[in-house]
Length: 84
Image (cartoon, rainbow, N blue to C red; front, side, top):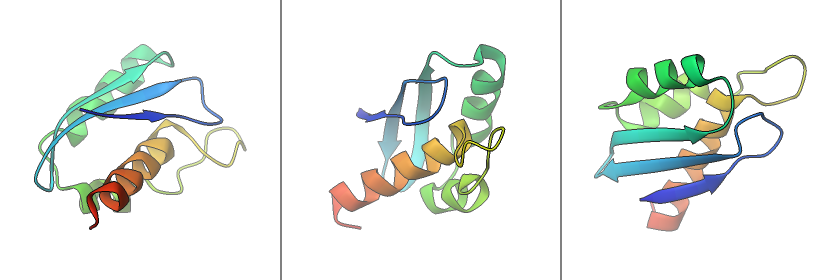
């Protein structure tokens, strides 16, 4: 389990369960529950790089980030920690 503390969003933390290069489970703490459940279900089973490509740079109300963008950042941090 990899945990990422989000910045600039209503969600405060993302928990990731990853197997190889595939996302097994995503859980957001706080934030817009329905939307975040939807994002989690959509990305589960996907390759890390595919999720980064789709979610990176998504902006929420001019904040310069969003929950999907924070997910992409979390995945990039995970990859960096793994040496990939």
